[in-house]
Image (cartoon, rainbow, N blue to C red; front, side):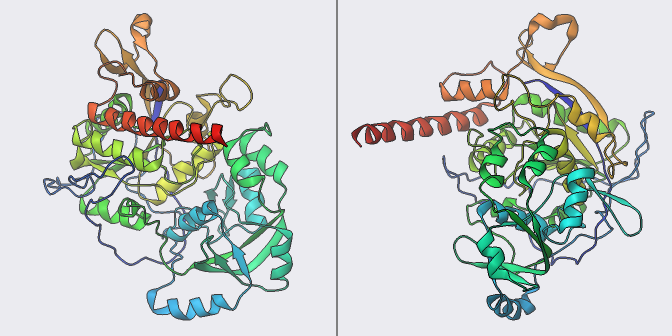
Length: 480
């Protein structure tokens, strides 16, 4: 896979309440393919934190900030305290109700934990327009907060009529559970074509998030201040991986990290990814940091149908740590709850901002971050270099620190993933994510050294189970 990688830091602005300290549970997740029983990559009993001293740069690279504050200086926490939960629930029961889809609930999760700080709820119209047209908010003190993706809640005509003149509404999940309250609401028109064109730069049919979320949604948006009645849980065996920004910051402190570098991904980890992450840590050590910690942060919300499911990816990531490709003593694995837009340079700003709120002061960005193939033409939807260029210029991300990386590819001579050498072009093989999935689906092995054996077995097993399901469904379809 071609990965031109850069590393960056951002500082954030955030207003909110602090959350209650939560202990990190032991590793006991169950996955679709199989149950795993081994050490928790978050908490290793073998780990002994190193002393954290102030970094002294050994190069000309200037660090603009060390471990950074969340946007606004304090994390937003929108979860109702336990002592008020019963009263708030009773109040919500009496309000007009707005139904939440599965993806709406993922956004409630994102908002409730402060990933989008200083945003305190679904966007009202002024916030929405700033996000949609400027990719940032201007705060009352004149500071700029990056906010490149609109975080909005759509409603239909019937719901709008049911709300009437009410200023507050209760939020209800698809299963009927009461989730929260939206206060001091504002209802405004959902101009779908404008939203799609501004966010994706195209209105071509086939954009996954557009087809799944925006087109079926109502013609109105409702914004307001959010109160969430209790922490969002999924009961899928992976909740212990879903650490909030506050919990992540506490874990960084516990490990005495003096630098945190985040790696966002929605694909299985191959050795090219590992090369980039390990080389990043080496560079940070050379710059004078004593204990850089990797935040391996797979996206856990909505993804398109042909992406590897979250539970399988988490099992594969665990094998990468088991096989020693990444060091569990200096790696934290956690799930980022955001849905995926596949909106390229627009979306990668959101990914960077959210990780800053979680306490990461470096962020690895690869080739074509948050991108995808054009839905109707045989080409990339976005220029593969624009994501990292935009991050270096984006309003509200001025404190971004960038470490340049060469492209990583499979070296057929060395039989391992290595940094691309343009003087030996013929010796390098670029294995795309599509090609990797094709290998696994067909039961073929990739070149030795492309991925750790344990991780590859997880993928093969997943695709074998998928093919078995498809085989059982075909006779039923024929008979019907």
